[in-house]
Length: 296
Image 1 (cartoon, rainbow, N blue to C red):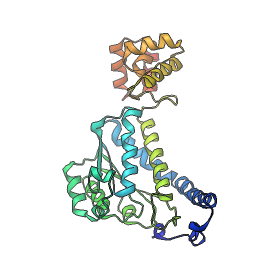
Image 2 (image 1 turned 135 degrees about the vertical axis):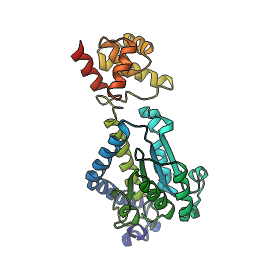
Image 3 (image 1 turned 180 degrees about the vertical axis):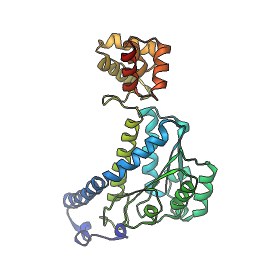
Image 4 (image 1 turned 60 degrees about the vertical axis):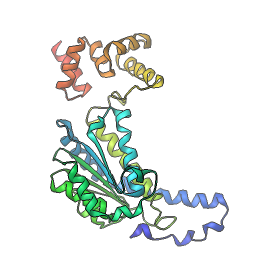
């Protein structure tokens, strides 16, 4: 496997000056960007299908992995609720070794394929679900079993791996190869391979939330305003989208209860009518605004 190979030119880096060694580590990270750029067509196809499955259903995003890959996958998923208002009950995580493995290494758990199959079966996957499986090697038995069980149930399976011809990729409906090559430290896939995974996950989830209407005109209009800073941000978004001065936008936001409803109320709808219009538009503010304009 490429990620298990070392870089001959850096094998004596421990004897180098710190700045020189750091520069070599950084240079090796460049391959992560190239790997993701080459994977953009595969990412786009997977996102389009995921949006189709999730848009008019109660389907879930299910992240799975082991070790460093699992931690990156979970990090991506947990940000979706505060950032985009994605419901907690439409997120699930299957981690080799369980939740404790997020903070304490449980490397042996990745070999337990039966646990992966059992845990996915317990989630009762359906064709409305989207499963994102992440493994640098692409050989992890736990992650492969989770994915195989989900695919048998008809769920969309999206696999991210860093080694060509990895089983996880060949067994997925939507394989995304991120060929980052040898690591600065052989096998330390938290480095360049992990960087590529993180970038790809960021792109996947952000574009998916965009297609699901949770971003409007470059703004996170479904974010959860859970503190003073975010409440101020919500006021600012209403002001930006309506042209109202910020004090008036703040008052409208408090009346409406959300950025999207505030914008629709500014367009002339009552709160109840705005909620109904937004629901009919599957949460897409642009569609709801066009419908409101055409009916006025």
